[in-house]
Length: 60
Image 1 (tube, one colour):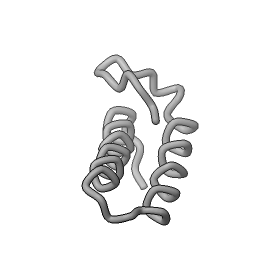
Image 2 (tube, rainbow, N blue to C red):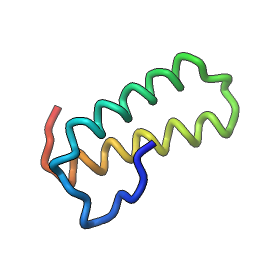
Image 3 (cartoon, rainbow, N blue to C red):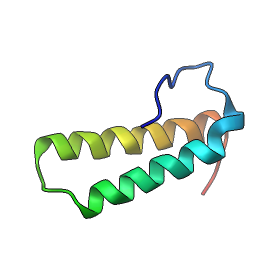
Image 4 (tube, rainbow, N blue to C red):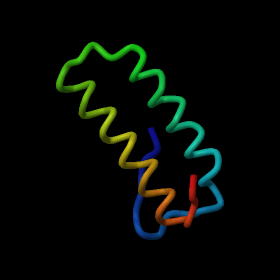
């Protein structure tokens, strides 16, 4: 999981960070046990991806 996502995030890392986060998200979704903890981790990863895309003006 990517750490230190703040307003001064360096967008030069966005490509690799988004790729890493999406891989983690897919793995977590496919192995999710439906627990509250899993749902929170999925939500956190989705939020991090959304933050980077917004911050770095990346569109799908």
